[in-house]
Length: 234
Image (cartoon, rainbow, N blue to C red):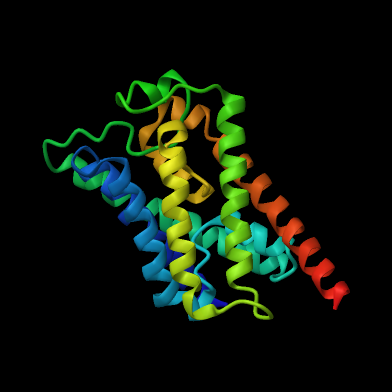
C-alpha cells in the first residue's frame, strides 16, 4: 500500500501542477481549450506512468466511485484520499510560491467557484447559482466515472486505451464546465486551490467536495447495476 500511496500523491501532484498551473500561468494565452487539454494530458501521462501501481485515480471522487462499485476496500480508499489531498496541496503551494516570485496575476488561483464570484474572473465565464453548480459537478463527475469504470472493466474493456479514453473524457468535461464552475470533478483539486484563493472559493468549497462524490457514488452503483444486468442476460 505504501507504493500506491506515493504513486497517488505524485500523480495528483502532477495533475494539479499541470492543470491548475496552466490555468494560472498560461490561461490568458491558451484559453479554456488549452487548460482543458492540459488537464487531459496530465491524466493520460499519469495513467500510463503510474497506472500499473495504483490505477492512477488522482481524485477522491474516482476512488469513491471505484469503492461504490465494489472494486476497492474502504481502508484503501481512505489511504488514496490522504495521498491525493496531500499531493494536490503540495502542487498548489508550489504554484503559490512561483506566483510570489514574480509579477504574476494569479486571478483566483484556478479555484472552483460559481455565480458572480466566478464571472468576475473573465468575460467568458457564466454566472450560475449554487444549485446549478452542484448539478454541473454532479453530472460531469457521473459521466467521468461511467467512462472510467467502463474502460477499466477487466471483463469487457481494452485496457491499452483506457488512459487515452479517460484523458479525452476529462478534456470534454472541462470544455463544458470551465465557464460554469472552473471544473472540479475532483475534491482534492478543489481543496488545494481554495486554500490559496481564500474568499468565496473556501466558502463554496463544500459544493465541489459533495457534488463530485455524489456523482461518483451514483456512477459506481449504476455501472454495477448495468454490469449485473449484462451478466444475468448471459
